[in-house]
Length: 106
Ligand code: FES
Image 1 (cartoon, rainbow, N blue to C red):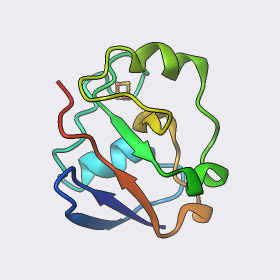
Image 2 (image 1 turned 60 degrees about the vertical axis):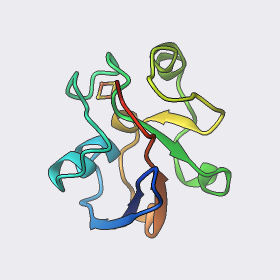
Image 3 (image 1 turned 45 degrees about the horizontal axis):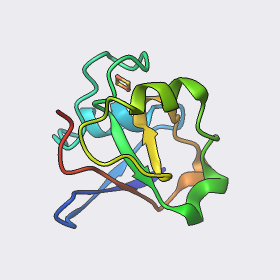
Image 4 (image 1 turned 120 degrees about the vertical axis):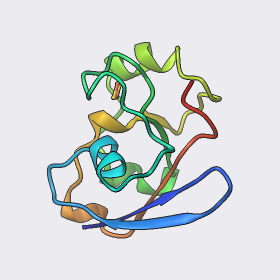
């Protein structure tokens, strides 16, 4: 599945991701430093903050309450588009999806 990670400067980094891998791990295993994933994916840190476009809402699971709680401590602006990348497993339906990364994770 092809996921396009977009930096806050607007640079696109397309990567191939095995379905089932989280967006957080996909970014880290491809060396993208826009996502940190400090807690290793347990929804305990908010350094995997990403933005998912409204048009892609149907392709990702709805935002869970645990994400709402953790996102309160995210470094960059939190919007209705904010998600924790570690809580979104990649599926084939996400092929071509753009994941916007914030300007900072700390
Ligand atoms: Fe820590 Fe996602 S990696 S909350």
